[in-house]
Amino acid sequence: MKDLKQDYKTIMDDNFPKEMTISFGEQKLIYQKKTWKIKEKDTLIEKGLRYGENPGQPAAMYQLINGNLVLGECHFIEAGNSLVSQIDEEMMLQFGKHPGKTNLTDIDNALNILKFIMDKPAAVIVKHNNPCGVALGQKIAIAFNKAYQADRIAAFGGCAALNRPLDKETAELIAEQYLEVVVAPEYLPGTIEILKKRKNLRIVQIKKIESLQKFTTPPFLDFKSLIDGGLIVQQSPINKIKTKNDLILAASEYKGEKYKIERTPSNEEYDDLLFGWFVEQGVTSNSVIYVKDGVTVGIGTGEQDRVGVAEIAIYKAYTKYADLLCFNKFKKSYKELQLEAKTDNKKKESLLEIDQATKEAKGGLVGARAVSDAFFPFRDGVDVIINQGISAIIQPGGSLRDFESIMACNEASPQVSMVYTGQRCFKH
Image (tube, rainbow, N blue to C red; front, side):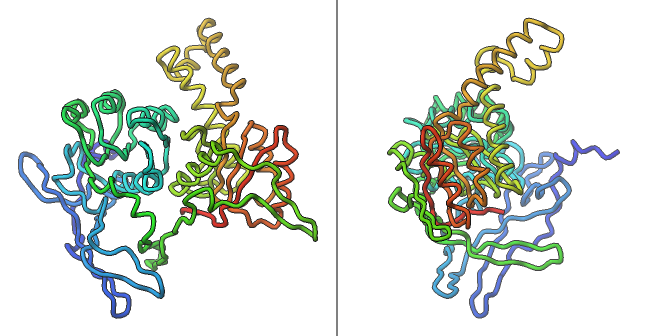
């Protein structure tokens, strides 16, 4: 049998061309392949990506170096604004393992979320191109710690992106964990030495993170490849929601009868609804997520039905809450305690205490806010959410049965508020 461990260490041969040109009629976009000088058996060689999504899968990353594409009234992002595709040896403060495709796409999606939440110190931890935890904080160490604790299990081997200079306090927190990548706009004196305790950690500096907010506006060209070699080309989505003034209180009309939400969100709820909607821009659809006080509580991703993903996000909230309780009290994961409880009655009692505390707190969901990337076709998904003590919901609206969701919120005790964005944010 082939040694898969060796495959993970193997850097694929790079047969992709150094330059690539894409023509749109008379307009041309010119891309240059990104390579890095690395040591292989004490010899300095120049190589591109380690491999693609899987070992044995050749891949290359290209940076837009020339071209200004205009299609209709849409002006796409121009050359000279590169972020991840610009990463070179100077920005790789520690290479760790040679970068592969998933490391770079995780950085990219972390920045895709981070660009909407630049007003406060924020941290995003991404794994498999979906956020594990996202959090705001009074300082960057608090933001990172909250993001990590939101789902410390999924964060294992993830990519952490920060929107403020990384200080010693944050470096110590990161060095205690196993992460594949950390990226920040700046590393304060003494922090690199702390982080290098993790010799395989990729330490990346992207100074443009400081001005990341400007990347919320210009669209990029999005390619989707088909199995027959064909392409679907689309403009990247533009999030129209910036402030609470862009949101609409839920209202609907059905068979001549008008329905409207009866409770307006509080300022704190508006803050969380906006935060959740910004996080949603980086979550694979179909998705429902829960947020509370500027931290993700449960993230349900990539499901086929909206009720199912709402339930999965609840399940994840409960399991992550129980695991954190267990770790904080016993310094072990919930699964470890669960295994020990099979043969130890005292451990079984401890497990039951954790389960009871999690059930009473509803996995930390009481008073949280729910975010859905598309409308609810029926009220069943909303009912599932309301039953967990959620206080407010944000969703695009637009279902023929929106009135049912509004009724569910108005009938709840206490009443639940709901706002519409007027746009969905699918990410496939």
